[in-house]
Length: 77
Image (cartoon, rainbow, N blue to C red; front, top):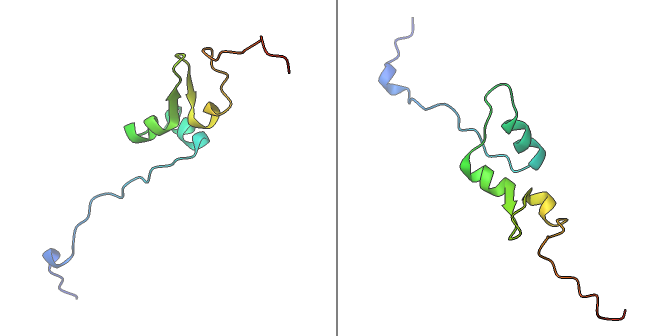
């Protein structure tokens, strides 16, 4: 029989869940039935708040039509 000193084997904590930065994956984690939730860091990278007060995902922000945007109708194009 092999005699192993248990102090000779390093102990490690549970594996760290690596952050996911894909929008669909993060939204799925928020709505998951098992182990729901995301870290504060992931939450802050998932959502943007426009100066007009609208919240959107980072991915959708580039397509957001801001309510504060001024459209100049006085110029002739």
